[in-house]
Image 1 (cartoon, rainbow, N blue to C red):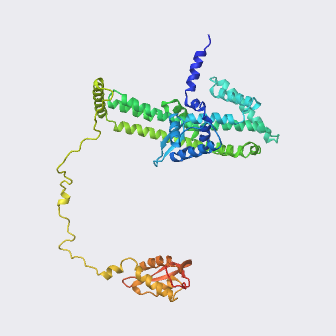
Image 2: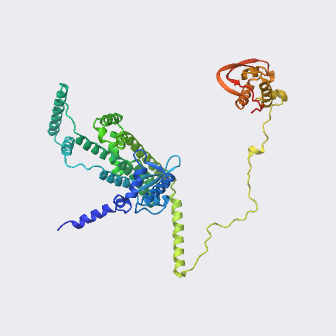
Image 3: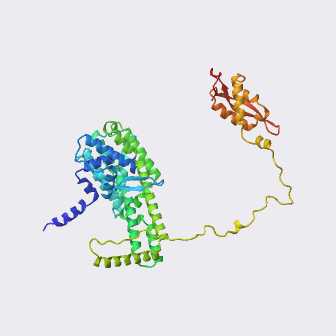
Length: 494
């Protein structure tokens, strides 16, 4: 008897996955084209508002081009529908901005389409050689017999040594055909295209685990102390709690090896500069291959950030969880359910109950707004001791002498001297002022007025300003030069 029933059940389960659900839609080509035009390895997330507008713009262009069938709805509705289909996920960035990103299911569907769009490699010498080399390397790492491993390594060393000696002695270098280079590039691109979906799958496993933990925590019936200890331990070991997390943890040490990533970058640069690469690779292929190292760094950072957020959320929930309040709420809800069941047993179809959603206002005659504060009732500290001599008072002129620039008087003198043509630079104007207008702070006022004057403009160089302090002391400052142009014929000033 055949196993067709079991195979049908397994295939049916696969078709229930969001990846095949997306590929099986009538408008799958439109949705995937939208995803391809929006997301890339360099742009993993898009602000929600931007994606809504982009979707509407693209659908308008497709409609004008006569493409059918098209998804129905505006950008927000379609993005919400795609979130329900588990092809988009919405999250909040650290600055509060909401963004959309593709789920691992959507990326898997894009990988399938990408593989179908590329030239499919047929049976070739390169593919057989790759299978043989992979099986050989696998056997060298997994063979339990010590002698067999040593024999494999000796053969590899002997082969590599002979090849090195041949090249060192001037032997001819084996050339790689264009067909072989094409197959190797396609194989490398296929491996790279799976990285974003792998990283996304690890992130989603953390989110799913968080939801599972919280649901289990709410349903837990044991003591609070035991629950806290158990779930804190599980939160600390998120990586080892799922198959995706364990796989990522196993590759994490390799991915964060900077020397290995540097070697990868150098090898990629050498391959991209190969003479045959110019005729095989497109600009898009080159950008994708050059961004492998950055893609790895970004994926690692994204996974670790999601893990940290999940751990922090679990810890915060456990720290703020109040079992007593939950039991009280559950008791109230159960009583409401009992009362509703009793009322429904005797109520008619159109019966209604007036439920007050907001409590009635409480009439309070007087509500205290301030309570006794000893610091308010006590007397303030005296300004000075009776034994001390009170401070001397300043006159208005003394206070003005220590204040800011006198803009009104400065403006009047500047306009009069400018109209009379008595200065060519602002420094020459400043030296003609009275001593009370040549305080150091007046330099700032003169520069401000000159900046807004139509007949004065900055020039190269500096000049000296000799100032007079209120106490009579003099001081010289070096200030950028401001030159005066001839006064306008109309005599107007800024």
